[in-house]
Image 1 (cartoon, rainbow, N blue to C red):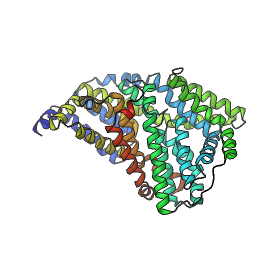
Image 2: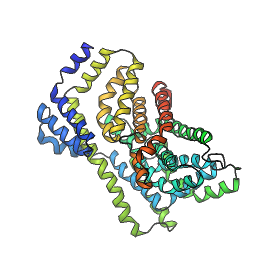
Image 3: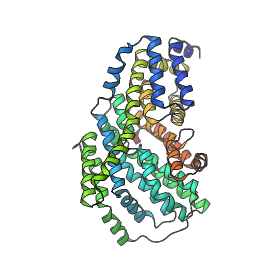
Length: 433
């Protein structure tokens, strides 16, 4: 343990002080981009690792990336799909496919979250869009309101786990890894999380008797639902098909997808020119939160790298233990704690460059590391005190956040099981390489 302290002590309070200050500000509820901006400014002032005059230039260059154009485009695509009611068609298809089994409405709700995740790339958008539609129906079927909210919030975590995911775009940009490669690698892990949430709901439903309806699969009803959802299915088919086939980059795929969604909206007369100002405003609001965080967090990451903080961290951990399983569990603990108190974007930009050298030290492939990290951070969307999806559903229904969080515990535990499996079974992330 002495070596751990010795390796870290070279950093000094010039780094520890701003770090502790940022933790305090986060706990006080200060907006994350303000926290990162103040902390980075103090760090640069106390260490002189970079001239303060470079802040503006570095912030601009941090967000001046072709890959990041995909972020607002995917957000806008999801908004168009909601406005044109294509999201309801996807839910109708999911219910026709699985609604006939016991606990079928809950299962089809989670499957609908997975469908929408293939379009929006955002968990909060997933939770907001589907929560409005599904929660009243779940309650009518016999689910308690807090549990219905927890189910939708948990299913919506797939928004960042199933490609195309904004989080994979950001971690790919941060670490210099192709987003297309990460999308392909995330296919099995994302599907595993989706399946686990479905099975957890089935188990809880069977033990509590929330939903007792059961019937028979109807091929004609499924055919009608599939036909009604044909245009909605076209959007994820273009996004994922174009990326996986190599025809489009993620950014190009997002561009084609949003144009396709708009064309379908006009063709089905579900979209009007008067809808555009509000759609653009909503998409700009979401992107306006993400972009400043990325720019400032990248600046902070560069400053930490110049101070050799990642290497000092690696030296300290490896001096304390040379056990790869213990290191993996340590990284998991860091990701889970960070996901509970901070949003995914700053966590990725700050922690990914810090943790990747440690992962490489124990032989973990960078792509495996990315899948492990994003999936672990995804658990934070349904765990207090941040729990973004919990707050989204609370805002939609008026149900207290802690009541929803209590009902989300089975989903948190099941997701943790998948995260541990992904951490120790690299093939699940590297199958396509």
